[in-house]
Length: 318
Ligand code: UDP
Image (tube, rainbow, N blue to C red; front, top):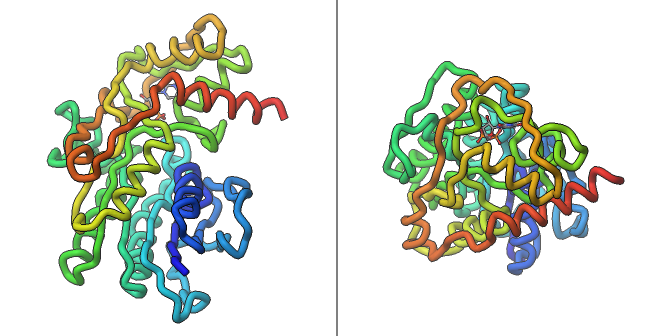
């Protein structure tokens, strides 16, 4: 009986990871989630004895006695609001889940002698002064700005994870996720992918913030999950940090054009102010993931967007 624990496993990336763990042969996944931004509906395909749905805020320690005497070999810590709209609304909760919550998740990994995978973020690079960003770049982060609740707490989470590795030899692997998209994103989470798709499908103008020349690179969720799987299972990666993202960079304006084209509507843009501290550029250097994980994204943006549009089309009409 192989068991993994996934915090935030009812969320967008988390639920896809749970699918992957079960498909790969895990006989049980314990999902700890307080549903701040996730939903049990995302796990609907799994029987409850295989995927445990445990309503729990990881800011409080989780009592592992229901798993007494049973081996747990993997803890993946993904619990955190991740969209700018959600982490602004839940700013203090975000700070706590990435600090106290990371400590509690690390303690669970220590308790079981399990490997620990931290879901971190490209936001640790802030508004980067170099592009593309490699793991050796230390970032350009405003510690008191509106994004600090996320950026700084993820940086703290990385630091804490590394100290558990150094002091106790915990097998820690850190993944910095760049923009990820796909089915099970929430249509109202405020991120550019669900916003543009929802707006295009309902015949509204696409809200482009600023001049639209800021760049992002978008990774389809199945590619992202494959990287997590490899980072979680390959030997000899303790203490390593990896960028996980798609290095194909584009401007937000050209992304709006692409979404409108794929939905089949003319592009109508509504300009809105650029949010404070919105990074001007973001593009991962994935040389390290290619080399050590043998991983790179394989789903082309148009194909991933078609699948995502189909998902939202269905959700928005029911
Ligand atoms: N953005 C936009 N219109 C929207 C939502 C977002 O132009 O309706 C821009 C946002 O300013 C940012 C980029 O799209 O430059 C990506 O934003 P998102 O919230 O998806 O994630 P971020 O990469 O900022 O964490």
